[in-house]
Image (cartoon, rainbow, N blue to C red; front, side, top):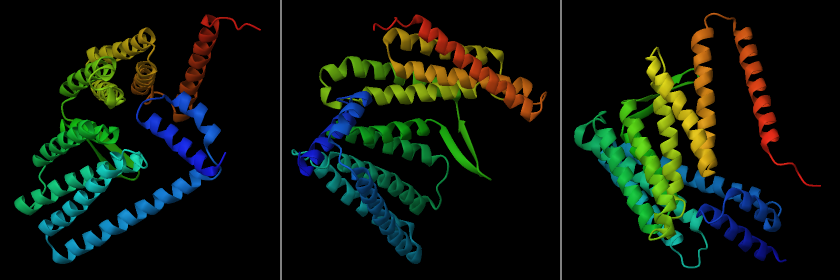
Length: 329
């Protein structure tokens, strides 16, 4: 088989996976048949070069704006870059021959990130500073723009950005605290949990109903809603159990983890099962930390935690083998 045929088939299989037409196991089964040697390194070098060129261009624009000491000039320059990325990205993503769909989707997403930066710079130019009250509005506005773009051109990357911006606009934030430490918080965990639960239900409906009918070209969108909903639901419930919160939230968080495992088993959906197992483990470790960290030495604490984890893993593995049907010779 010629190398160009290998390249075309590899690109098509990868595109199918990115569009949600095939799952990861099927991609892993098909890709080795057509992937050529050294293709990964060539693609990596290509993306590193594009990233470096993009960063150098932004550095030049930032230097011009800094020398001019004008946030408005910086906003105009960034808006021009965003419009250019948008045009090229849309052309690539909607190309009938589908030669560069992934690159086009990435460029469109980068243009939406540039739109967020433009809104921020315009706010600074008009108000003199980026106050905390305007940032959530800009996040939600950019998220809505990203969602509209995703549904208009059937691109999943802009929808991923939209969900990230919308959830952070509702009150999720993070910051670097120095010395390698990061902090995360949610302004209203109860509100975030309700929004996340609604997102999970929307994802199930989107995936099982809409993507089989009027929105079949938006395959994979429901999965994004589902994953983000599960992530922020569990994070919200986890945060509600920290720092001496009432026992009721601990019980709710534990019940939610068990319910996700049961739901995943009933629906045969590994996403529910995976999130349930991970956050139930986090719940157990958090309770263990709260009650025994100050009572035991660090070595004893981690020895007991590791031993319990190994015993639980061994028990679950034996249970899985006991329930699996015997293999026929």
